[in-house]
Image (cartoon, rainbow, N blue to C red):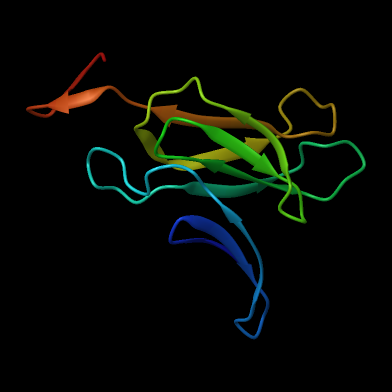
Length: 114
């Protein structure tokens, strides 16, 4: 099981023992006090097991291999991620594409551009 764990992402075995963790250098909540990261598993490396993908409150998205080594990180997104992250092999190349939503600041129920 992979879960957010304080300032890290942690993996636990079936008995609840922590197997490994990855420290994240990011706020744990976005500006609306929503806990982040948003986590998922995706096949993003050819010939490898699924990787862990996390959208962080800082606006970064990271990918970790099964040993929790950083594969890549991008920091170009708004910090307010929606609550889901989706993975699918859209183009048929055997690797998953990653889809998620971000939003601008909400004022009075209306989404405003940042």
